[in-house]
Length: 183
Image (cartoon, rainbow, N blue to C red; front, top):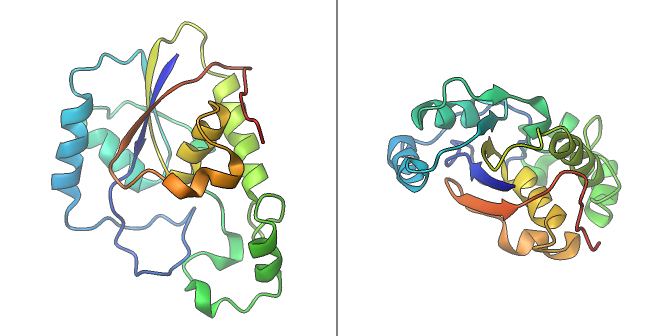
């Protein structure tokens, strides 16, 4: 199936602030960015449309005409737990260095590791109806990177080299129960 991963538009958060599950606002450029997204997907007939419950995704889904998108919490960004809405440089948690050293396996304090996020993503993929040919997914950079790894487009080690930009559309051929992750 072809999955169209649509990243939310630019957020109104200061540079260097850690956010993931926080429901943050969007920049004033939302309408211009959202219109660009709409123009990229308006001619596509989706069998199903999904969205993260965070407003930065639901607002874009609504703007693009998908007010009835299926809301799925598994499409949320990485949960940074106690670090949410703090500047990375201001976080005084001894676990932070452990996270930096092994973000794949070490969770943010009271949050998630990338492995947790990836597991959540795979659970979502494996519950998609098999008759879907095309689906839109309004989501976050972390989830899109999970999709890229799952589809074999990139590796975990290289996935942050090309994180999709705000308001971008990433099209991937993904099949439930067929994880092409090469590690």
